[in-house]
Length: 118
Image 1: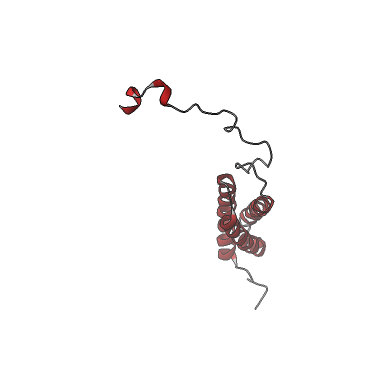
Image 2: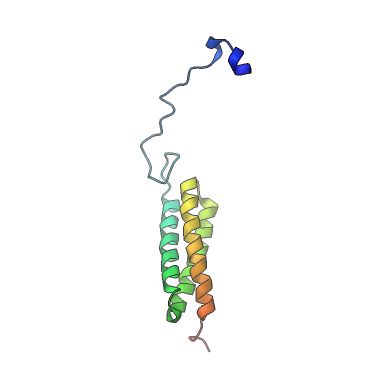
């Protein structure tokens, strides 16, 4: 009700120039600043996650899937700790999920040292 009875001249005029985001930075840096470490961790976590997930589908590749999954979980967790934007967190969660699935399936198929250390 307060908005309908407010006088017309009492609202501040929005400035359109400050609403635009600067063109610097990358696709994932929604705040306009570059985040090279966070983006590198996103890429590493994603690659390790895909590697762990794909190799977990083969029983004999449990060493690769378990180690890649473990490294993907660790890099993704550190990336979550230092991430700045929502896009970085989203990509890291996808990489973490696939790394975890690959890690757990690799552990179920023989583990980190299965068959190598007796």
